Image 1: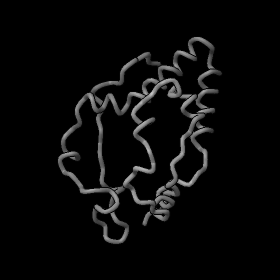
Image 2: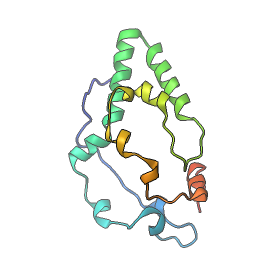
Image 3: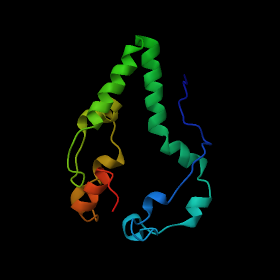
Image 4: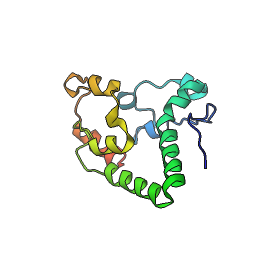
Length: 142
């Protein structure tokens, strides 16, 4: 049980390019995953970057621990069950969707972040590739 408000700054992070290899050729698929950078694979990230990447997870764990202390064991179990049900919502992966119920459960409905006004799908430069998005959703290798 941890009542940590901010994430730990020094977490070991191992990066692998195994998931970005092409199934037939065996090399890095730069067209789908971008150019490979050796520097990001060898050099550790900045401690602040690690904290920012783990911020939401740490806040969620703190919320679960506080609910368990205040209301008993059933409260965090109920919260985790609701979150897992809402996250399993089925939709086409290439189409934009706002998961309002998940935002309410995580407490993001009360804040205005940059995703709220800079996440306009009509301004996106990503091409809608139905086949690639379904392969990623179903964990199929190309």
